[in-house]
Image 1 (cartoon, helix red, strand yellow):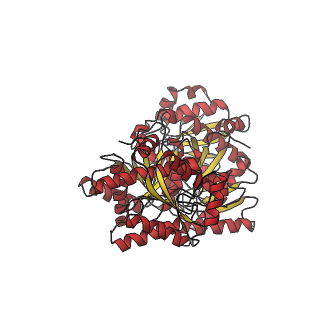
Image 2 (cartoon, chains in turn green, cyan):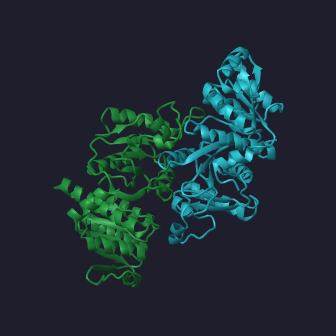
Image 3 (cartoon, each protein chain N blue to C red):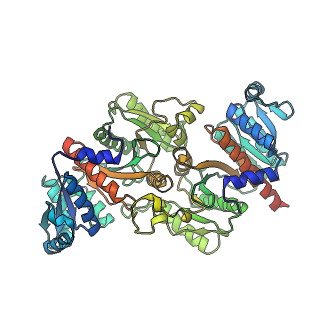
Length: 307
Length: 304
């Protein structure tokens, strides 16, 4: 079972190199992450983007990219379509977003899934490594579905459970978040929680468990519980494997709290054909490396399953 | 500027005491009341059955400190009596006491008989961020489910009033969303852009409001620069305005439970400071809440 990003890093070295298409590595942080991942033996990059920009940043970070396949393309959507197309045709095992707006990538994946008639809903899981928690923690959907209805939440959850299984969590614990309090109108997110819990209980969501709590406070303090003195004594082992957020704003905003805390984050979209790493455009090279390594490991495990 | 909860308590010491209405107090409330009474900024007014109140107080150090008991034989009337005391100016602050959260909030928010000053009450969480001596407001984290732009405008005004009490003269406000660009498909980005424009036109006084900002841009100037977002708000926001309750509530809880950050909070937009009982606020921070309420009372902020 994978418990940390260090585990991921170790496995990526064992399982690499994987062929990785990088969408617009036109920024020093992204190029540096590609360089280091290649030097470690995790990836064999295919670089797609603006030739001059890629050459300039490669020179800045001291990376000879002449030995790698390069596809020159300026149009952002085409850059993305090319990389995702390579994933779906089996030419690469992993794709990583570079310094490109994420919406292009999601659009490419949605189109590719539709063309492949996979029936798969495109979603993103942002994963945290939290000190004191002995497993990785995911927030979903942090990227695509703005205000998912119940049916979409089921798909988001199934994708997250699939990712958890790939990471070795046999029966992941899931918290379906809701802003419900004891007063005021009922929230649709709470009704969704009740339905999802029932579905999980009857086995319709696969091997997973939905926690009897819809807020972070409830998870750690119990229903009606109170904080004793400080957060130091909180038992973080109760942290679920997945937080299913009610909407995109919630998942995305929570996921990026790594910048305020001693937490590491990486984001990934598991498609029907492989892994797509979704670093934020603001991420620094070390965080991008973590995400590439996650992509390598997830891709390897998908391939194992396919075999 | 008040940058820590301890400073909040220190600021409240030494001035005029505020009368705190507490309906049906429980033992845990008494421990807190002892502390703030000893600190010298609160005069507790306990509301409930006189005999039961006397008996409760006798078992507590509060018995030797100044306090008042308002006898209400029917416990069901304790909250409405507390609200009446506040409305009549015989109490300055209202605390939840032993009333359940649902009846407390419903009665306080009741349009006719409650304590609303305007159409929109809101709740601001005050978070002491790690690694720096700074308090940050996050709102609305408790009351409004899905506020529209009109409600968000008032929620922001409420928070700015509180920021003023904390000594933030030109508060920097991050209106947060999933992304930092305006996207008509994501309603929170439109609201954020409209609020930022309102601020630009001076509708929020000296406050600098920027949005939409995603959380990485709001939290880190470096991250924002990598996305070509340049603003005095990035990495240095005093107030985070969230899109809706589904975001606000878990956001504060994540900062507390995973980040170990301390939090307090206050209901705003009422005739007086109102303090609901939030289960993940420790007694230490509840004392700070009362200190802040006292400062609000003294400055006449956020209430009539």
